[in-house]
Image (cartoon, rainbow, N blue to C red; front, side):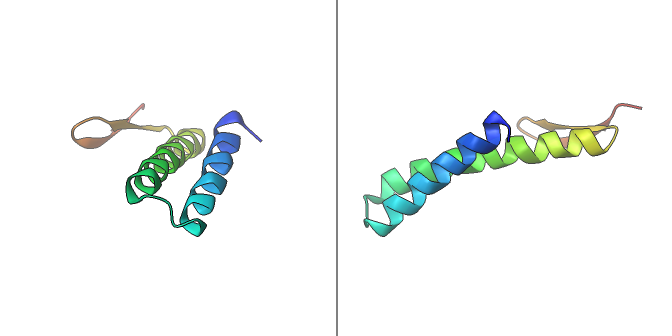
Amino acid sequence: MRNITLLRLKHTAKLEKLIKQNADYNKILKESRIVDKYIVIEMRNMFNKNSGYTISFRKESTIKSDK
């Protein structure tokens, strides 16, 4: 597995633990955002491997062709 996948799994486990413990909402939200960040990175990497397109995550989400 790649480092990003391992980090996502680590933070997913931490998020599940926080939810089971009925932790503070802000802690759960923060951990959820971290997991989301890693999911976006993984999806972007998968997309780039499978096509000639890149994704730009700036203010406006755009898809640009490398061709």
